[in-house]
Length: 518
Image (cartoon, rainbow, N blue to C red):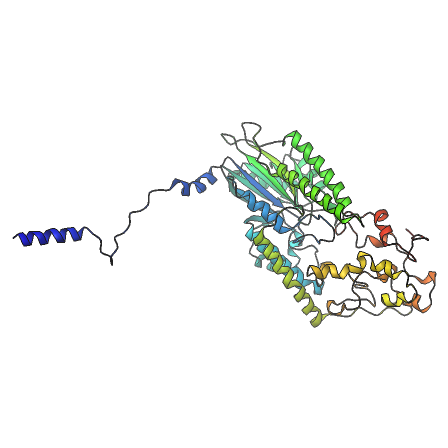
């Protein structure tokens, strides 16, 4: 009997112990408030941060021809991703006209521009794009190509309402005052308390649209520029309905900070602290002056390095002012508008930079392959017209001039592209070779050999007639400022000053004593 009882006790004890081969299920862990908090906090956040881009025109980054050039999708991505490290929800919206820079492409441009549009689309996805308006330039390769990129779109006349913490934000795409009014009403009916109009027009057109009606929007962004170089500045009008125009080609982002009061109500525009605004304006002026000095031809390298360090310090100070969280100025809902210039000293997002690097690696090969398969030589010069002969022919009579050219940056123009792997990028080649797309010049990327660099004929025109019969009267061009700015334009050489740059290309036998016609 005792054995039976002992056996039952052992079985009972074993039954209470899980066997090694059949593990008892572990109890569910207790709720983790820290893990569940972010989603709940995001839906009740007392504010939000909105980033806008517009009129990017197919630019992944600046050309890099000058020091300290603004722009770059990887720098924009860093700003968005950095803001997402904070407690407030962040929305990134694009205003359109971003995929392409021209309404029509030449056949040789198609491979590069389509590849670039795909790279931009990939970057936008990495940035968590909420929605983008559709502009005319986005359809350069047709609506089918645009839609194949798979980006969330907002068609003209459409409305999108997005959660933004404890409030909702409405986005309206319109090209007229009536469209803003109707779209704003629809957005508010869907629960939006802050409405942004993405206006398909210029700054002046957007101002007229909101002046003719209250429009029902809180902020209007003009997503078009009137001409190629009208988008050089960031502009904010201080009207009843503020209107914004950003620098084109991805050189700046617009940041809108929303702050919410205890209960929803009309949004009032907050001014950033006056002292901060004054300091930012002052820093802008100092940075512009510093850029002009750093880009001055012939600047001493040590002095340039010192000035570059100082510029980096000034840019960091301005960036801190532009991205610091805003303190609500009242008890109700408010918003503040700030531009974030994408300075060259700002960090780039590694993930998006990898997208840009992949594009750079691909596009040169694609362009070269296209040129070999489909390229056409430039037409021959018309009878009696001059042809290109190259620097060697010039040097036979102008031996004292050649060292002047060899000591200039024009002599290194092709190498500067090779150093960054862009010698077969169509956006760059034209200003780094002689006779690009001219009769008797070079029209194929696979036949650049012998035409590299900015040679004599880039400024003086094709020289065959002058070589055959040397005379001052048959030099095609007497170069002046109008010739220089074909490449040294505001986009590629924003700090170019003819009077400052001119002496750097003069020398014995090259205008040093007799001057250059202007």
